[in-house]
Image (cartoon, rainbow, N blue to C red; front, side, top):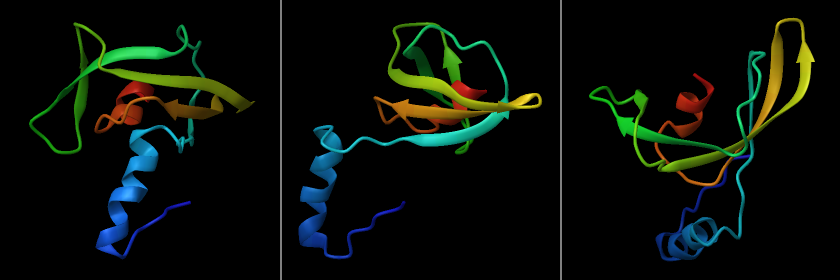
Length: 96
């Protein structure tokens, strides 16, 4: 589900729902099956020079993501991802 606000004067109220955690985002991803790390996953992400890239680096974590495997089929699994923070490319970096 993707929600857009077309009225600029309503956009602030809509954005506050996410800022105050009144709305939670849940994502699904299909990827090779791995042993899940401790939950929630906390890592430090650094922006890369390329827009579509981010890298995990040493240091104080600045992202947090809950992960669980919903189902497994062959060598792959369906993951459920719930980010507690909204860092750019957070889910892509955690899954990588």
